[in-house]
Amino acid sequence: MRIVLRLVGLSLALVGAARPAGAVDGAALYQAYWAGLPAGEVRLQLHDDANAYRDEIEIRTEGLPALLTRFSATATSEGRLAAILPMPQRYDARYALRKNRHKRLVMQFEARGSGVVADRGPGDTSDKPPLPARFRTNVFDPLSALTAIRDALRHGNHERFSVPVYDGARRFDVIAQVLPPQPGDKELHLRLTLAPIAGFKGATSDEGDPDDAPRPATLTMTGDERLMPLSFRVSLAYLPLVIELRRWCGSPSACRW
Image (cartoon, rainbow, N blue to C red; front, side, top):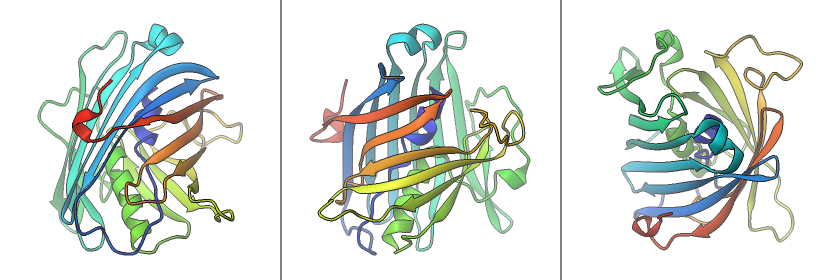
């Protein structure tokens, strides 16, 4: 279920070229299904204003995934909204698995030379060594990738584009393309591809290995300034994972289980 943490935050929307003048908040609860059966719940909260952003996500499993993995996770991403590209500053994710109940991934983004490098921060409990610096330079954490994609679209990049992402162990590109709108359709439909770069188990295979092959996904979004996803579909271990909106929350503070 860690793929959920990487992908559900890749919220896209196609709005005007300018960033909203005031703060924009969005909060919603989602239901996840795997192979057609209830698999978990997702809570997503977004906040951005003219200068900064803060994204939060919480995931908890249910049904068979909960029985097999006992997976749960929370993550927060913070950064600045710069003139050209968003600049992530800190990513803090806490998660639990059956045998690892208190895992934590902390990344801090620091200027170094001509780029910004993602380094591990205080409190990180990661077991694997970090990737070489070239794979951690000028990248986004999984939740900051959401902000980067929204920002690209707001600045008029409505064609195919790519966002480099590092999740603390793997480096991949999220390739996004807005699909042509259908007559009268107020929703946004996007095609995403998760393209592995480094840190995966093996080289990309033509057989579609679920760990290291490019992973296609579809995303349906609202077309308003909330920039919130309505549904997300991807294949996980060869079976469909679907995340659908269950209800909007009136405010981030009201978005509780």
